[in-house]
Image (cartoon, rainbow, N blue to C red; front, side, top):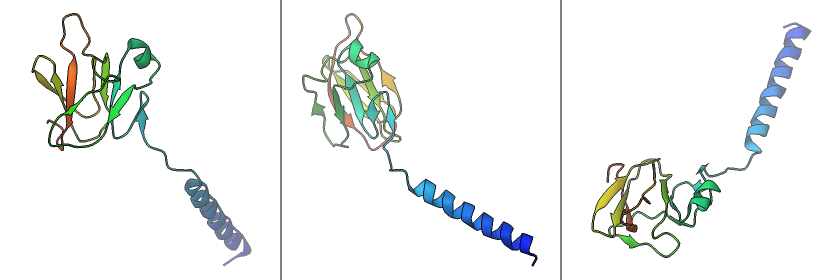
Length: 127
């Protein structure tokens, strides 16, 4: 092996070591979309909350029954499901239901629309 080959291999080894060190130096972060940290279903009470990307409430637990919404989520103008593979079964005040599939956003607040009053996060993308 010539001195040039030895130097090239040594330089390549140093570059690989530096790259591994640099990659490992960054802290892990959770995925966030529109202010909603994975894996949550986030509620935005007002249009201003949605525009500012500031959820007012979030739910993350898969449950076998509905969770009643509190005052920071009941009647929200936007609901975002940041989960990758779990649907959120939304219950409306008039008794209707709807599946909010993974990575979807719903804007349920239109004139005459019943508010969402409960949520059940399912272990299925299609509820």
